[in-house]
Length: 290
Ligand SMILES: [Zn+2]
Image (cartoon, rainbow, N blue to C red; front, side, top):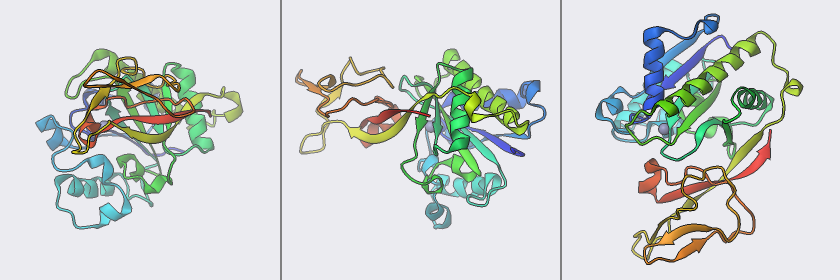
């Protein structure tokens, strides 16, 4: 049963869709069909929003490991994480049944539901969302146990992220906003149906999903300077198969670097602006069925 659900926006201060959706629902109310659900609406990082930046000192969405929540770090987001953990958690012994944290990406990932476990509950959720919203992508990040992630959503007994793009940082696009709203409502519809005992795994069609693999870095020279950019044939092709031999990068002196692995992969977070400083070009994934 979902007795308490927390919807959060503004974990990253320049990801506007979730911020606007939360503010609109605070002002105008949730759609009335959700009246039976206990949903709290929160904005996570007001200081970052005011500055129109992802974060002020450190990435808030990496602060929610047990280790970081218990150490003495005076960074703004480290202190904010401790306060949010009291409000939404506490992590590991949470008073919130389900935390839904809303993000944007500059990559062409459409409406992506990120789940951190592939157990029966999350399979039901993924199948339900995909049935309601066939254009949705399901991304599974279960490379480590749920509670070992540093994500804000792990303050809940269960937690997921909505990741919608492509949208430039600090910009609000109506198409991206509508995808965000549609996915948030699909998840809340699932919660209402789940509470009524109407969810049955076998009654929902199996769905395509992508399981996170590795991050792929930009090519760097001996001084750590970048030597290439994302190839135009890869750009904006998130979750499309990248086959062996297909171009991945174009070097600044005009040569193509191809995908040399023996198997195809499903790249995503291609050219994500927030990962630029980390030299991350994209992440890989394998295609699975849930
Ligand atoms: Zn984000």
